[in-house]
Image 1 (cartoon, rainbow, N blue to C red):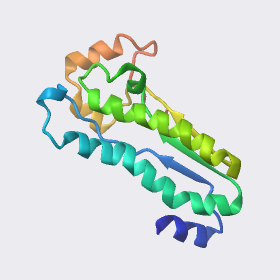
Image 2 (image 1 turned 120 degrees about the vertical axis):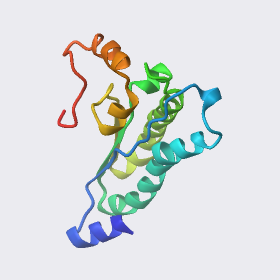
Image 3 (image 1 turned 30 degrees about the vertical axis):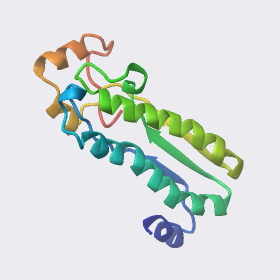
Length: 150
């Protein structure tokens, strides 16, 4: 509904950025049984639902751009902070992005993913111990986490 309202108000819908995400840390065997559903509902299903809602307007105008936020965790099976489920959902985002690019390209809609490393957000700040933060920083040439401004 929101996407059709935007297209109606502005006459078009040019871009969709799928940036919502949840992080889950801990060993998979020790996580609550519903944790996979919770994380994948936001990190993967949320993209599918937004794409389904945005594509009709983009297809009507014969162009549009979709940008999905993945993560380097997608290629590493998680990261330094025990986030295997997060990595798995972000790998799904990468696969979803490639499939959507093939599906939607003929309609003039580009689909790409950006896969940053650790970004300094409230979510990662809460998840990183001081030790984990230092370990991550030691591997970053800039000596800092990515910022939202980046």
